[in-house]
Image 1 (cartoon, rainbow, N blue to C red):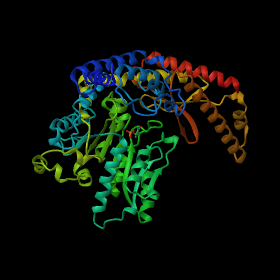
Image 2 (cartoon, rainbow, N blue to C red; image 1 turned 45 degrees about the vertical axis):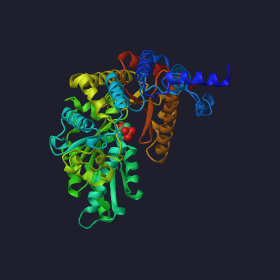
Image 3 (tube, helix red, strand yellow; image 1 turned 90 degrees about the vertical axis):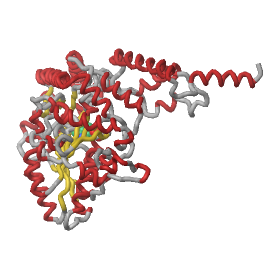
Image 4 (cartoon, rainbow, N blue to C red; image 1 turned 90 degrees about the horizontal axis):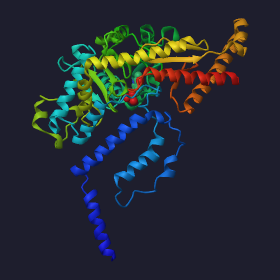
Length: 523
Ligand SMILES: *Cc1c(COP(=O)(O)O)cnc(C)c1O
């Protein structure tokens, strides 16, 4: 066989497999393989260490230095997924994942995402794919109604919703709208004078948005909250901060209030904050990234009381609403404020329907031009489970979280640090009385010495809890994360993985107890 023939043969071989990247029969074959692969992955997910155990840079050592010159079969690639990709995965879909906040997958969400990728339309304006815009408007109204949002946030009122990628983008877009609205006002304040407010519990997304939006770093306020008020931002402290800024010649612009903070799921009092904001003309955005989902249940809806007074609100359906990343639902009362800031209309996008202003062109509601058909996955989730089951999912997670809370409360070595609102528990090991320092503090007279001993006690307890968390996570059996509240190190246990059942938190609690016993006996 001469070289020429060999090449010819190889060409033939590859053309039957890989030269048409959208060959329907190959798509069917390979697509089924991936679905089977994922079904096995979900079935076996508890076999993997929840937190990936690899070292930084592990993958470079395992993969070739450059792109393969010749096509490789899907079988070989999938084998590499098993051998090299899976070890680097931290398994967010594991029922033993209790870290951060959940990132819930579901069959419906997955299938909707598949369709979105299959159609692969960048529906930046109505004409680019009318259904991408129209379905998004419909599902945003559906979900807004389930949340019992005032009509003024829905298209059926004069507002409307849009699916952003993430909360960071939702905050940035609304802040830019608020900024430009302010800069258009009489007197036209200088951008250098605009001030952004949140509590010290507000997500770092607010600070990032302020940076990008050109807010002077000195004009970012993280107002102090305390444990005594469960880390909620008080209207009085907001007012004091605003008054001090106005006194200094600054211009209050934007408040980001929380329904469910990341650290502790704290709830800011929306009604009284809005009263203050109204007095001084601030835009109020509500970040309900995690807890917003639970507010579809009537028994949790009160956490959103006062929502009628705000300008915008967002929640992450990709957190606790069974919709895969990314899917942040943002509602605004005044879409024209967003559009004034974010619209562009280059010649190559000009068309009759956009000119008619009869349609929504979502490119004008967000940062990017091109956008994914994300509404499909949310529509699949809403239809496949229905409002009734979605509410039941939330309730079952809260029930499982309550079970864990009860277990913690029964073990006197531990304390629950802040009251539970949803499905997340903040707890820590108490400094055992046998360790001496606590006794010493109790006997100490108030004053410098007492303060010093208190600090020592906090540091010792913090180190103990940190050690506990590290040893729990290194076991690979469960994964949880931490926060720090008023200098106190706290473990966070967030229930909400789609596959979680009572037995998983019972097991997780056993793991915590075992590691606590080992660490306490070492000390
Ligand atoms: C997770 C979270 C965010 C950040 O969400 P992204 O979608 O990743 O930007 C913001 N705020 C709160 C309260 C969160 O819990």
